Image (cartoon, rainbow, N blue to C red):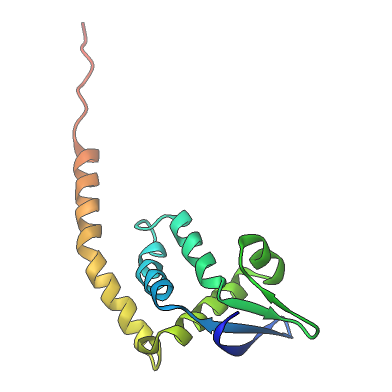
Length: 144
């Protein structure tokens, strides 16, 4: 059962798809919001962490049909009741916005910029270390 459910409608190829999104419980919300930005940054997070976080978020979403409601509590249900990755991404954005008042009114971009500015030194550190390893000259084979 969702906490404070809100119905959203997403247009997909001319069809209006209805979903209920819910509020996260406090500790789950903290986990999702802590993991979400980092797990989805290219080359920093890994896909498994990104997928795990997305699936946790989607467990607070239901697909609404005329005759029933289908909770999206696992990967198979997400794949079977969401027609495309684009619809999935739109649901994720709607759910994050609904659960995070500081993402509303254009503040999401500010949050992402701040996240990137915090991650940038780590990225530079990693790239510098890799660059140093790659630029080390290998020993030339002996001509004996």
